[in-house]
Image 1: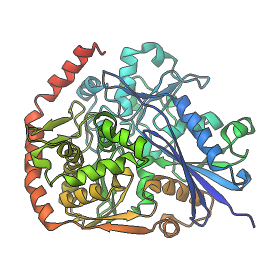
Image 2: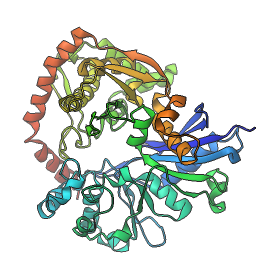
Image 3: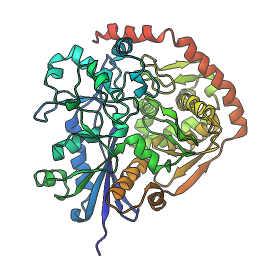
Length: 499
């Protein structure tokens, strides 16, 4: 009997990672097709949905070169959210998608909080409106691009919503993406007509909400050749990228927790009572890539001349600096901040630089700053009653031994690395696809086929003690700069004539 496969697509912030697995959980291959983000001076961060579609088609064709596409039973999805993509009645895009990192709607958040009853805002766990969420983005469009709003027939909060819509003509989203729009009712079971009315959105403008194991449709003959899949291949809506990463990391029941080491790094946990604890940052992984792209030009040249991975070179330099980076501290607020601050106007900073500061101190301080910030989230998890001693990490920040050691020391926690740490999201998507197709009973039993721990990083007591003292300074810096952040935010706008 021919081997059967599940294909999973993880539409992340920087690209589409597609992974192919057998139905028995054997990893075959991964293909990542990148797409750009367009960062604006007004806090906007946009992506072209045509780039998502191109990545989807390209990844499929690369992955399936050596197999019969008829043997792929289904495609599972996950993607970033909360976004805001508007399409007209004919399905044509009206704007670039305002992705989850987009915080141009800071003022709109304050305006909406002033007119929407607090009871309605309980649909958001924080009770506040974040500039990254879909509701204020729509309101910004209505105020600043009324011609787009007037033509909008559908609004999509997640990347895969658009891919599925293009393939099937069905407007659908999943509960996790819908739940982070600040547009649902208080019990998060349906759209809130009353809440949406404050920005002029009606129910028919929003996609239908589905469970993550729902089969939404199938690949039509019309797009089969273009997207590299067989007509009739089932399409499983899946979940948000965070939710699929949680599944792939083994986070499935009360008491479980994991560390996301991706663009939006952080800690998520379920209390023993089933309450969600922790949160995700705005630009942790992005801060490391910013360091590589903007500061580490020398290391990029070394990569070209030596063939070594640039992050391996950077990690060696980070390891050469002492704990505490000789007093340099970095705050990773390059795109405002979600957890642990909920501050769209927060700004990134280096503090403590002097004439004795070395290059490696700067590099290490970035990773330590990411760790301190996530450490604040870890403190909130422990305060919520879950005293974590060990945690699984997934995503790019978990690849480097030195980065794992820094995180373990700052948070005083043992960090476990799965064999396919960077495929956690696609593993989650594959598991949901398999459940949808009736191949697996549930997430827990399916996970036994996919999850294998291959490395463990333990905290070093001496370093834990040093970082505990430095954490207080990290917090004082944030508190000291807090009153200045709005001034810097506004200055950037008038300096660049941004709207």
